[in-house]
Length: 118
Image 1: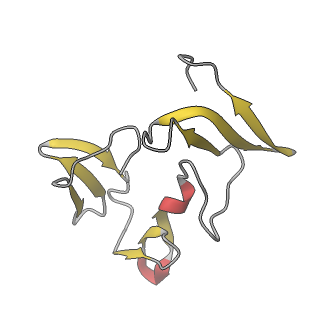
Image 2 (image 1 turned 90 degrees about the vertical axis):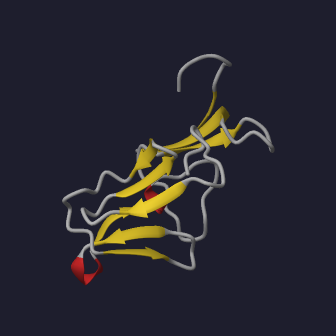
């Protein structure tokens, strides 16, 4: 799911014939992997927690490890230009005021003033 648009227990996650993975809440599409037409033939949830969409020969098209939120899992890599963003509080998982971003020569921490865009 998406921390910006949480869904209820009756939401659906559907893997279509076109290779697109779609999260819906009723008739509203909340999220999509945007992998339509990219030759996806399989979806695998690995023991590491990484959800991966594969082409034939297990070539990765999309993986959840490329989209971190507020933490990293074992074997998950923070790629250049990617950030992890704190949660607002332990019970409110919306984006908080602190984030870490991997830049070319450093891992940089930021504090964001309330109400300013990320």
